[in-house]
Amino acid sequence: MAKTWLVSAVSATLLGGGVYFYLQSSVQPNDFTTLPAVVRTIEKQAIAVGNIVPAHSVLIKSQINGIVGEIYVKVGEEVKQGQPLIKVRPNPTPQALTLASTELKRSEADLESHKQKLANLEGLVKQKIIPKNFDAYVSARSAVKSEQANVQQKRHNLELINSGEAFIGHARVTSTITASIDGTVLNRKVEVGEPIISTESSQTATEMMSLADMNNLIFKGHVSEHDAAQLSQGMAVMVTVAPYPDVEISGVITKVAIQSESLNSSGNNSKGEKSFDNGFEVEVGELNIPQDVRLRSGFSSTAKITLKRAENVITVPERALQFDGDTPYVLIPDSSKQGFRRQKVTLGLSNGIHVEVLDGVELGDQIIDNSMMMGVPHG
Image 1 (cartoon, rainbow, N blue to C red):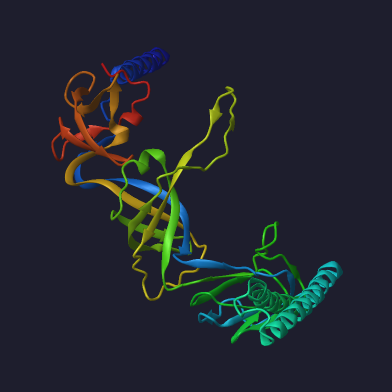
Image 2: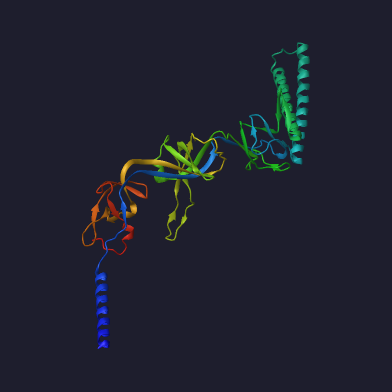
């Protein structure tokens, strides 16, 4: 009797549990992750990547070939226009030295010849054999003056080849290179004793150092061709510099390039098509640099340029959207069997994360997170 009662109790328990789990499994929960429609400001921005550079910088090069003799300044030193920077010591080849010396001697010989001819003609003038306006006499006087200038030029040339210095009239010509602007020495690319190539050479001239006005810095970078079409001078910009990621420096666009530059060299992709990105250079000036921020030339930077702005508008996260072709929808929770309904919406400005909703959603509405609806039929 006890055994029969025990079996009946176990059977009843199993049956009740089965019914419970069956009922539980037949229930479809309507607990969806929702996101609120809130008011915020949406900005569409263009991003330019580049560097902080001086607005005005110059490269220092030599006008004569030679060897670096002395360097008078250090990197980071501030200099004034006309201040000596580098002395170049001439290093002429034997052929150049011989040629300059020979040309001087030849000119001196020609000068002596012309002087002798002039002296002969002057004797005839004194004897009144020929007048002072006699053609040969006038030509002889002119030839002497011309040859004197030629000798002087050849002598100066030889002095420059030998020592790098010469006096032309009251002016002193020297091989010492001076600063062409007021500024700071950004770098030095030569050492004492190093040979250099001049700007007069057919080869590329040696860059010896560079100067820049560090009191006038700008941002210089590139934007895509799609963003460049919407840019204009005077637009507000916020610049972030890599060493100061939490500091935003305001400025305005001062230049948008007319000619594009290829940021990536064209090449063939896996489909055999050429691919490259056209970039347009932009410059941002009038930077409002905080006093406790010290910028250096070459700091990598990012400029954010506001193209469009919508203030205090109703927005939803973009991940809450679903599309039927080009038509956007959101899912609104309700008491229906499936637990939601589709609501068509009209969209406005988007920043890639949130999007403005012009129609279809009210402030405070709860929107189902569409990214969490994988496998759930939308109806």
